[in-house]
Image (cartoon, rainbow, N blue to C red; front, side):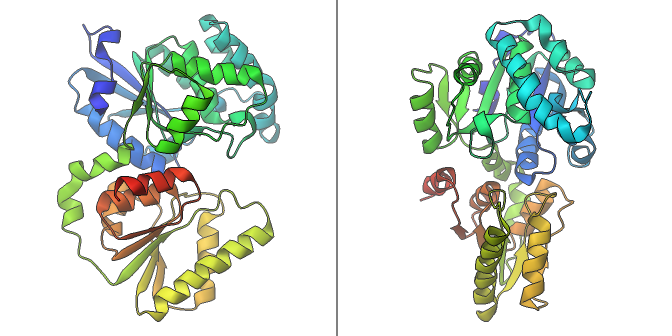
Length: 362
């Protein structure tokens, strides 16, 4: 299905294509896993000559993708003309509304007003663009769904190159600005295809963007990694060990963090009392996730709990996960990885999408 989504006929197929993979979050292990699969599939396609990946963290991502991949910064980061601490506010309140107007008015000549440098050159060079990742068009974590990724989608539209939205989750969408709703609608309707990966998203898309004729169902890219690395995963030696991946992006207050930490500690205490070891798998390499795990471990006072190294590639992490006898996943792609590997799984589903992925495996 993946290669079929790349509509070579829409490009100049007399030459090998340059394909741009959009907005990979370099510190997020789910995004890195998705990029690992897509880059390998693109590289095996004889019609594709060059692969470009845009990311928030070029230096981080270079460590985990093959050398044949060209890596550029995302557009949101490319025009820092203001002191950094004010930059995000400037983009949200000044640049993003102007970008929305440019997209809706099809002012492709204004692309250089919203990005520059390597990011601009990548959009100019690309023959085809893949916007992927996971859960981007949503107001779950940002007002009006404004983020570095939805900004990058606007640049994608202004580039006037054919593009696809690949394996996305959509919603919730509480949009109060009508122009923003038109912006997302315009981007979806002008895609070669909108590939949706879960039941919840299909419902949201049908409600928010009715009669979308280019909508298709797909599976998350990470599920495809098993077929590429089956020999590594299937030969992993099982240990009497429970793997755990937490999710803390929605914890806003000290009380919420303390309550969450207590719940995970209770789970760990139960596991340890039953004679099993524990291995934590951080899914975000920056922010509060790893310090929070370290606090949880410190309170347990045991040598039977450890943290898996965050600075490794996707396949190394999934190979280590394969040694677990049970996995407790909260972060979405930890659940997807466990399902991919066939590990007995307890899913802590903070969102309907995770429940939908688990239903796929009964």
